[in-house]
Image 1 (cartoon, rainbow, N blue to C red):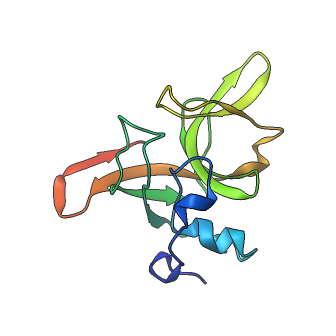
Image 2 (cartoon, rainbow, N blue to C red):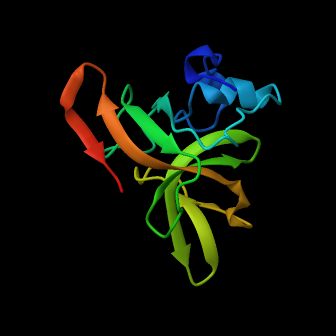
Length: 134
């Protein structure tokens, strides 16, 4: 079982979108976290593609067994890297949508790429800054 605190730090320069996670380095090394056990885990937001709702330095809690539906914020393994986006369904299918308009949507071939649903965010050291998403 992997613990988020032991994952390598992500190399921002290796990603076209700086919003990634400490898990990204593990994924690049083909050592993706084993979340099959269904335990929730935490990651830190890096970058600004999900601003203004999610800011750099905030902690997100991911539920691997969570129900991904239209509008959910999800963690996905897409184009050989971990990414965090809003899941959107349209007439043409599913896509990963960044909240920051400076970034583009990414089409999904299937929902198999979705590995977890964000259920909470928090700013380290500030309990009152927590927000739940389910």
